Image 1 (cartoon, helix red, strand yellow):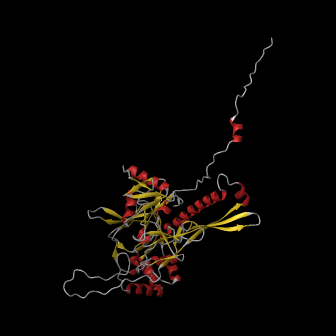
Image 2: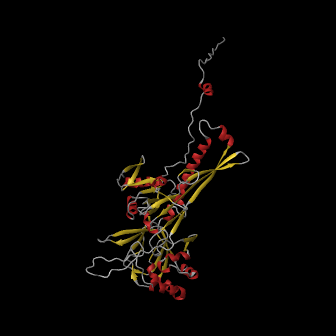
Image 3: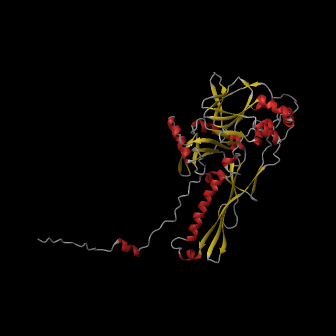
Length: 463
């Protein structure tokens, strides 16, 4: 018996879409770029046009007090202080004998402390100098009602007890308790006195430093302006003047540049519906703006992270960014304009707020809803680095010349300008028929007074 299978062919009754597309014009988007970010720093900084490519920041004369941080080197588990860094101690400021500093550095003893251990206790004799090489610790002062209160958080590079170098017998006025495991270098006062007796240069320097009269200064460390108030009758008024820094800092405009190349065949033949050269320039300019913001945050010379004054750098109390930490940042300056934080740092702050049952307000800024804290916007910036250990920083700024804040520097009306302080210069056609354009942007940033810029450091993101 034979079985017959019938196959019915499908007959197409109209033109297929695949064939029809050969006769149509495709609608295309402009080239998209994933690397474009909000660039809030560039938007929020007030930009000052400067002539001559240089901006000089004149300030009142201030006195160095030697309260900087120290640097350390490690060999395995052994940690040593860099001898020259001992000049950051007030009494060793400007001490020039490298040999004596090296010998003094070798007298430090390394000690390890675990979490929640007391390093020094208020009321006990102050007999040792402590250098905090690694870790975090609370500096505690006795409260009015008996309980200790946190004065500040100490971290890598901080020191306490440098008064023992003077030889005076005193007591600790505060306690220090570790938050994390800490590596501390300790110099016993007796060991320093032995070193002092062996080095004529060191002994003479300490004697001269102690004998030097204190310089009149205000609470900001500036040379004081003598005033009189509350007097009656014809009292003799003090004479005074406002002294200036003799060597004010000057900021030169930095430059970010690239050489854009476009083949003449592309520029001539493939310009419909979009101009190829213009699109190449647009994407290149976007990349330069991204690099500009990166440099404003991270540049060693003028970047915000590296130009914050040591007195304006604080550490988180417990690791993640808490409302307490941001309040501490705000309390150190007036008229804070905005916070700048990595998006992950903002998320970590939100988690801490949620733990406490807090829901920070939001605000509209240039058509975008942003989170605020105490009315100050918290703006995302992915140019703030996340370092090893999942640690980042949060920046707060006061801006503007009138408020003695942070300002951006640029120059306008330059030749071949396509945007403020950015120009595109045609550099000709080479022997391979390639067009070349030099694309440049000129910029910098200046901190007019130290308290205009603050940084919350060691912000842990993973907790």
